[in-house]
Amino acid sequence: MPKEMICSFCGGIVEPGTGKMYIGPRGEIMWFCSSKCYKNSIKLGRKSRKLKWVTKLSKKLI
Ligand SMILES: [Zn+2]
Image 1 (spheres, protein in one colour):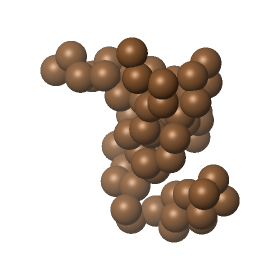
Image 2 (cartoon, protein in one colour; image 1 turned 30 degrees about the vertical axis):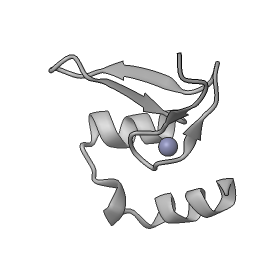
Image 3 (cartoon, rainbow, N blue to C red; image 1 turned 90 degrees about the vertical axis):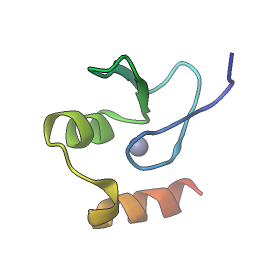
Image 4 (cartoon, helix red, strand yellow; image 1 turned 30 degrees about the horizontal axis):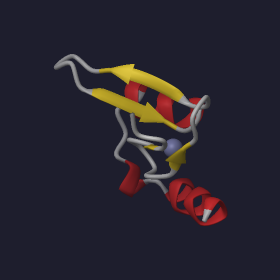
């Protein structure tokens, strides 16, 4: 098993035991580092590259 997952929305690292897992309509597994990423990606259907806060968040994590 992989030790770390990459957030499907912002590209940040999802540490084991944290984040949310989502199984898509095609059976694909997606991971999200936070409920914020989850909501934006799944419920709002947004593209991460268009959001400014994603860039800011990624910089903080790095
Ligand atoms: Zn994220």
